[in-house]
Image 1: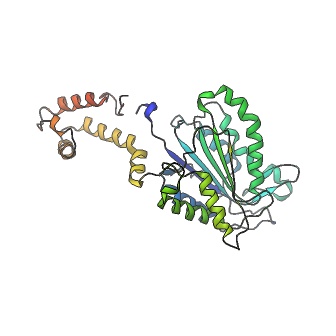
Image 2: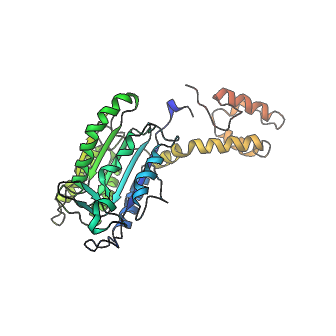
Image 3: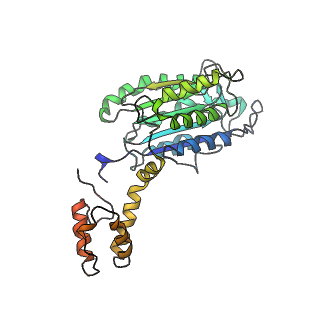
Amino acid sequence: MDSSVKQPRYYLIACGTKDYPNFKSYSTLESVEADLQRVATVLSKFGYQRVLQNDLSLNPTREALTVAFAEWLLSKDLSAHDRVIFYYSGHGHTIEGDRHYLLLHSTREHILAQTSLATDELVRPLINEGVNVSQILYIIDTCYAGQGVADISGFASKVFDIHQKELEKNRKSVHLAAASRLKQTAQEGVFSALFQSELERLLEGSGESSNGHHIQPSLLFDNINNARHNSQELKQQIVYNIISAGKEACFFPILPKKLLIWEANVDRVIEQLLAAISSREEEALFFINSFLLMSPVREDFVFEKANLPKKLYRRYSALGVDKSSSRSKVKQ
């Protein structure tokens, strides 16, 4: 399909650290697996496809969080139309006078900075040449996550302006959400549960969104804070920030689920369909006839085996499809 009419695709990277065998001060986080599942479940209703599950899922390594993520962002299949949400759940720690760190399975207590990952490292791959994704939302679900968001903002505000001048056609819009403020601890499972329940509620009553086409992140996180405020047991507050905002945030589209699934898979379906027709035209006749009987273009065909290849070719041409290729090319 022509890139100029390419539909947006939605990708989720959901990972977190549950176990800390080398760090006695921090206990196992039993809620992490449930956190990842809740986030993946609710975002699937918006057409999100979870990626990098082999490298970035439970107890990810430092290399996976940096190198694997950076390499994926350079995938030629990604475009500026696509949206990415990066969710991380686990223990977070702030070193006074330094930065906020994500504690990992390999983190060692006495050399924490060298065996953990500074939170602002997550955003650095965006400045690599060849990264096409223009909108990404980072959600940091850890203690003191507000400090991590502040670190990312500080780095991005200095560096992005320089790189944006070189990449004016594909300005990066980075959205940041922290499950707690700078000096707040985060309760296990609280953010992911509210994220799921409030996003589902907004989807059901989609008229509350600011433009009728997308649920705005600011509205979602305000609602989570309001829900938290109404419960005396929940002390943490969500922090939301935007860096170098360009176009409107389009992370949560309000579209029927079936349409989202179709848009995510349409290229693959067309490719498989045309490949099957090209290789086994006569056996595909019954399927084609059944499809055309439900199509407004059925009058264009005379259902005769002898004339089928010629008529299919004529129809391909009328649709702007190159028969020599298995992929469709839609005319402008």
